[in-house]
Amino acid sequence: MELLEGTSALRAALDNVRLAGKSLGFVPTMGALHAGHASLIDRAGLECDAVVTSIFVNPTQFNDPKDLAAYPRSLEQDLALLEAHGCDFAFVPSVEEIYPEQDQSQSPSVPAVAHRWEGEERPGHFAGVIEVVDRLLDAVGPCRLYLGEKDFQQLAVLRAHYAQTARAVEIVGCATDRESDALARSSRNLRLSKEARSAAAAIPLALDAGVSLASEGASPAAIERAMTQLLLDAGAQQVDYAVLVDATSLEPALRVEPVTPQRLLIAASFGGLRLIDNADPKHSPLHER
Ligand code: AMP
Image 1: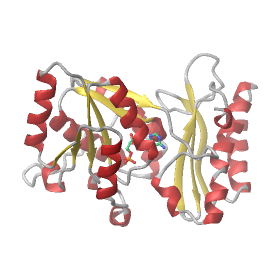
Image 2: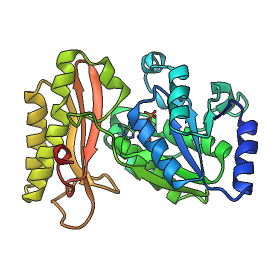
Image 3: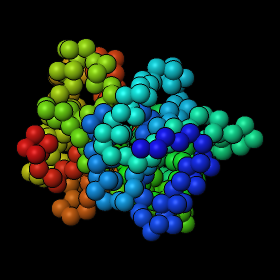
Image 4: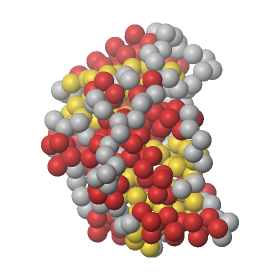
């Protein structure tokens, strides 16, 4: 694996890959890598001739400086994971490399799909995400971009953003990798106390309750009430949202649709940590996969 820190060195290396007629898969990450990230790298490796992974903790997507300071960093372990999963290029730029002084943050316009849910809870977050992915893609060039469904709204926002631009990028959404009790894998799970970790298993249970109510044709209001109650009964400190939405616009659903894709979205706090997850209400329950 080649480790690159500079934008121009990366561009030159990847131009050579493309000139050789090879396809390129790109997996942007903020490090603290786990099996969920590895599943994206594995998929990119199966579908592309070469894989580049970036590790960059992006300051512009944090609305709370304390969260940025507390973000876990484990570069040595991350590079070992990338190597073990056959990644070809690791791009680990400095903040100055991505945000040169003369080229200050521009706050790009965000598509409407960014406005609700995480957009409301974390003002400026998606503008920061769009800005950094744009800048990383400037360095990487034409590629297939592998993103996790774990961050479902982020995937929808980037799909909407790149649908409006002429950039040569094809977005690939990848299924969420889960722990044995179906909790979505996240570096945050390791920071939960034993009690909070076992209570957080209510998140996939609530999503499964939503899946089964949706299959029975319950109303969105009844689905949302049931998911929220299940989370609170399990000990959630706060439920920011537990909703059924249109899978493209992320607008609240008016009814369960037989054909149009929809999504169940949850954000809830356990033991002081805010966790997000989502599920397709037309798919089989998470606990049966
Ligand atoms: P992050 O480092 O948190 O910015 O995540 C980098 C990429 O990994 C994003 O596209 C995430 O959606 C994806 N990701 C994070 N956790 C998981 C997971 N459990 N399963 C699949 N993809 C994930």
